[in-house]
Structure formats: structure tokens, C-alpha cells
Image (tube, rainbow, N blue to C red; front, side, top):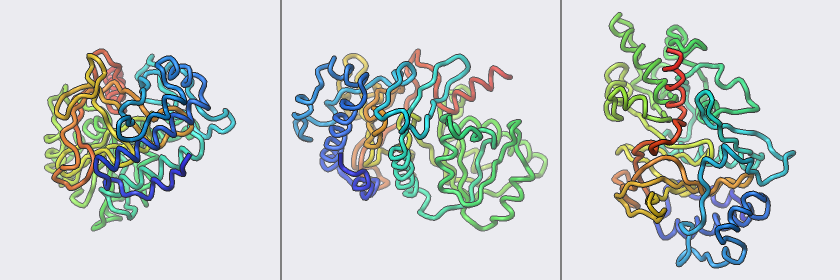
Length: 374
């Protein structure tokens, strides 16, 4: 299999549709071949739908592309141990978010896959934050990253984005209260510097924004006009509170001057290949991954502008067969190679979870638990 470092040499949003189709088909066929030979359960599933070595030979990037490769339902990672490396090469096991009583996905990483996830994420996020590391305010509590061996999606998200931080400060205590003194000291120490903020959407709203509003009424304010916020996780809880993405941004600007705000879409089953939101509010697929919208009636490829089930493909996963997955989310492709921001590739939006799908986003999972505790 080709070295992933060769792929990493590409700029994240540099390929047009034709160029990307060729590169991605070549890589995904290689990954499929690799997993067929190293994961018996994956091989049996692929053989059952007619995919074997002979069928793979027909993929040329033109008549047959990565769109034609079979996908796995993401839910399978909750039910099966899908691993393409020996147990003694598993360096880290990541788990998805799950509310109490729900099963969680288990993703098995060897060192190479974990390293490639990190390198890919750096390439993508640096497009939006710049290449330098910044003082980082984490809108969460310290205890969430304590268990390094068994990463939760929430802990993995924090640790992943911590690569972009120099000095770090947790904004919340382990009781999920705003640590006003620590935040004040951190901001005073880095006055005039660009600051990176990271957190999950509902927690930012519930434990950071609402507390800033309360403090402002008491005459206590924080200036975050030099900040850039990256946030992710589900919007389900905020939609229930009638808060749109636009209002979320505007309210943060009003309370603390924070206006450089980027949502992202990602999942533990394909860590590293996140979809960042550009200045025009569009989520973007990088050269390392892609989204395909499937018609729920027959799983055919839906045209741009038509809502359907989101399929995600990634060029990273070597230690587990997670390179082509059907999610439980609904979305729509808005366009390709023509976003006003100038980035090549597809841009899209998420409509929400499919009906009857489990709540699984980091934010939504926490929100459900928060509601139960309340």
C-alpha cells in the first residue's frame, strides 16, 4: 500500500472533482484490498455482496469509482470487533459517545493510523487557524481526558484539538461550573494574543455562554474578540431551545466579542477527517475524505441539493475497516468546487439525525445525560 505521507503532501482543499476522484478511488481500493486480507469479518461481509479481489480489479477511477465500493453501516462498530491488525499492535481503543445504557462503537488504532489521524487533522484545521500554536481555552472540565487508554469521543476531541494549543486552560471545573478566576487569569496572561477556544456545542451554550450572560448582568465581562472558536457535536438540544447556528454565533459575539466561530462535523469512527465550516457557513470535505449522499429508498447516489443519508469515506483507516461508512445522519450537498470561500471539493450541510437513530453526537449525548441529571 502507498505511503500515507505521499497523500499528506497535498494541500487540504486543492483537488477538483476529477483529480480527487482518481486519487480517492486508488487509495480506497487499496484500503479495501488491505482489509479484505486482514479482517475476516469484513471479508465475509464484502464477499456476501459480491466484492472480492477480482471485482476490485475493475475499479479504474473513471467508469468504476469509490462511489461503487460497498459501505458498512456505522452501527456495526457497536456490534462487532472489526480490526485489521493483530491484538498486540492495537495502540489505542477509541469509543463513541453513548448515553447511559447505549452500546458504544469501538475503534482499534495501531500507531500508524493514530499518527496519520493527527497529521491529517493538523493539515485541515491549520487552514482555518493558521500554522502557529495558540493559547487555548478548553470549554470543558479536566477530568474528561484522564483515562488515556480508553478514549471517549469527547476526550479524544479535546486531546486532538489540544495539538493546536500552547498554554492550555480548562474553563470549567469538574462540577461543570465556570472557573471565573482561572479564565480571567488566562485571558490577562495572553492579552492581545490570538486565542483558540474549543468545546462541544451544547456545553459551550449551557455552561459558558449562559454563565457569561449572567456575569455580564453583574458587570463582569470577558473580551474574547481575539478568539477563534472551533466547536462540534450535535445541535439537537439547541434546536429544541430554538437556537440556530446564526443565533449561536451572534449571541457569543454580543456577550464577549467572539465572532470567529467554526462548527465542524466528525465522528470517532473516522477521527482525523473532520469537516470544517468555512466563513460562509458551509461544511467542507478535504482531499483526505468525502461525503456522498444516499437516497434512503434504494441507496443510490442522490444529486446535489437532494437530502439523504450521509456516507463518509476516508483515506486514513488502516488498522480497522472504517474507510467507507454509512452514517445515521441526514444531509445535503450544496455544491462542489465553487464555494465562495475558494476551497475546492464538496460543501454541504447537516439536517440532523435520521429518525429513530440513537442520539450520539458528543454534545447531544451530554445534553441527554445533563437532562436526566437535572
